[in-house]
Length: 230
Image: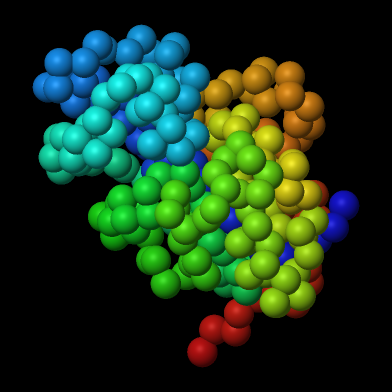
């Protein structure tokens, strides 16, 4: 197994808790627009894919832009707390000079705004790629084309990039792109679902808080990468 020389995170339910809040906000937006409330099972079928495609699939014929405007007006009062240990994990990687990024199917504008509302320091991320930042979207393997191109300029190969996500669509995209992958159980998908799709048991963690211990225990970090403290 190659050393991990870069780590890329999904955002929703990987770094912040947002799934249930998002489901409730979608239901409220639908009610306000006179659209049917989606069953949780139906919502989860499309959760994690691009937002535009999700709205179109759940409410065929609905005005997507109107739905997004309504959702955003309702979301202003919503709060998305960080997953416990997220900041410590990012600090751990930053101290070891491991470049980091974020790749999400969330609209880029919303993603950047939501990061700014957390205790995360956006400057530690080499990039933040949302829906408008990439040509393809998860679960398509080419959702990581821009990521691979970015890191190739730093002489980091695909198999030296680790993607961390909470859904099987994250796993499908990372696997197809030749990235390493760790699944976290802070979202809607269970360990059984990851194992069923072929992810090894040791590559499924309860949350991102366990990532430093996992990387150290598996001896996946390059040596002599720690930042000096002045």
